[in-house]
Length: 258
Image (cartoon, rainbow, N blue to C red; front, side, top):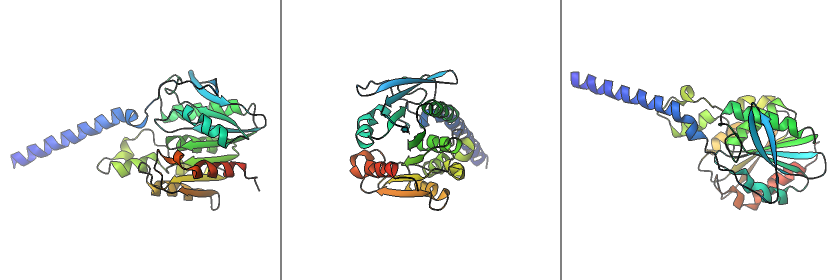
């Protein structure tokens, strides 16, 4: 009996130590900052937010329409500049490097990324009256929050999720992630506050974000508000390989509001 009790104590201690380790290091498992890069076809705009300098890549076009893009947790957003510039010629483009990413200062967190998104939007609104948002993977949570807090024209969510907590539960069923996770990105709970039309793009073979999580987000919006586009044969990080991806985005952004 003493041996069993000792084993249980050791196991419980080890489990608690693991929980503590996960809690302390969790942001290093969510955010993977990219180094600063350069691009010959865009200019750098610096937006100040809570004492941090946020680097935003800009492709300027005439007119009132703009698109603000929030990327994935390990994405160099500069890699989208040429693709977006070709696919979306009718809008100025603003691609945000999260704090700690791509030359922006600071360390990433949900609260920080939310604040930076608001600051970028308010800056862009000085020059553009029609602003669409696009968020991919992690960035979908940033985009949904921003769309719930500011008047946006349209919202595009790519490989998105209803809640980062729910995604984590798919991977760590043996951990109480609901208690541990600090950066939760509860997009589904914000959906009712979004008034803009929504496009949800799902990678048919997404190996990172379970399809059920994307579908749960789509149905959280008002009936008829969100259109779902499933791109077959591509995964979470190979979505760009399919022409259907940006074709769907282009058509959605070009459609007149009715």
